Image: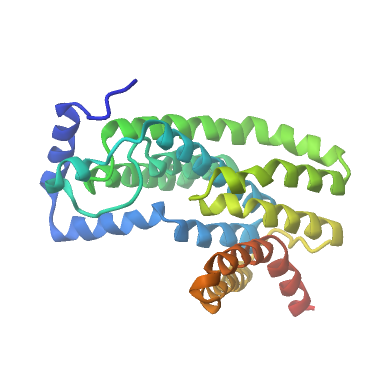
Length: 289
């Protein structure tokens, strides 16, 4: 079993990186922490799924969910503390949860990998993806929330998940296309239902059931939006999807009293998942007719 207390070298690496600390870099890398928050993905996924390409957005949702589940279980396996919890002088921000591995490092691999794969042959994707990879990975060490070993394992898990996306997802799609839609839907519910009980601290796992239902309804009734090629159309669709998602998600959390908080939370998640995968496309198509 790996030692939960990292070597002196890892602390020295963090301290060396933090030698550049100043108000500007503190502010900049605190901003980079946004890309490790669920709110970032709650914006990104509607932007892609509704605003740009429904099929790509679904893949993004399932990849991010898979990444979160993998990170969740590995962290529970090791339960290593974060750098700032061992050496408070390393604190720039304080975040909850265990340190090993870094979920942000997984994201730093997965999102650029998907971007580069989708826009094959475009040099700008390598530039944007490379910058995102470097800054997000560096930010986790600078902020004192991850050790270098957390980043390394995060990269490794991210590569594995990216390989699943590149090679296993197409095979799953082929299998699902051969099935009757209702059978594929029932199968998805049977597979995803246990996640509600196994993973209580990961919001994306709770979206699996309503999103799979929304996918079934969208394809059954023909309400999948066509891929967007117009920038202003993308903006309209994206704003519509993101605002609707957050309104549903937070309204149901607020309207229920504290005694019924769990009910409001479950309803908010279920309906916002349906909004993401079905109602946003359905209502947008109705509105533009």
